[in-house]
Length: 269
Image (tube, rainbow, N blue to C red; front, side):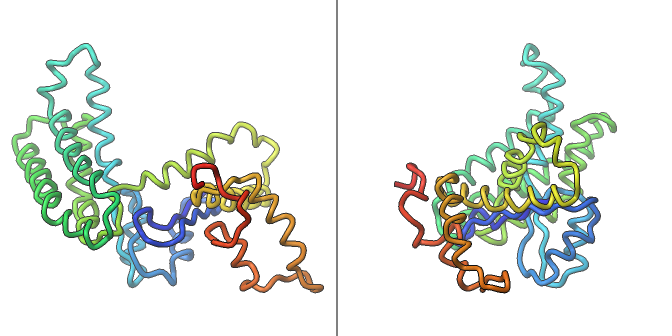
């Protein structure tokens, strides 16, 4: 199940689209984004880097949260009871540096993209540059086991450096793909309940339903009342030939400002 989201820092309606495909082949996102121009925030898989090479106008940005995972695994292996070893470890020093970057980024959430970019260039970029310079120095010292989690983390960051720095060039590019991770988590939580959905058509249907409900949730709608509204209104928009004009659907979109009051969640009120 692939998931596509609008940028969480972009001033556009929040949209979450689930798409079922039988494989993880790069041809699927290549077809999906063939007419797209902009930034794609992803993890570090080569198939996404291939999109940047194959599709004109697409820039691949990579997730900083993925960059820290090997270091977090290394700390976990050391154990909580070994604080002295933890604090002296290279993995811990890497996490401290990444944490400082996240602390500054977290303070920019409510800024405009233009303001965020200015602050990133002034305060975050120097930390990012220092982080990668430190990685090179650390690897040059050859004190890290070549097969350890720490070494994997250092090499991962260095290999993805170009893509991990993309968020510094545009205020709408997030620092990581945590939004898509959250969207997939909601989908996978119910997986054990879907033993009866074991066909391609069933998977495609569930992708449509989740696209609708998760986009509604992202726009602070009450899912029950919103779906009830759709089921009431849609039959009235269908022509005799079974089709619906796209323009007639706009008032029913999850980001529409003309939805009934009970469609909005209490949080929005």
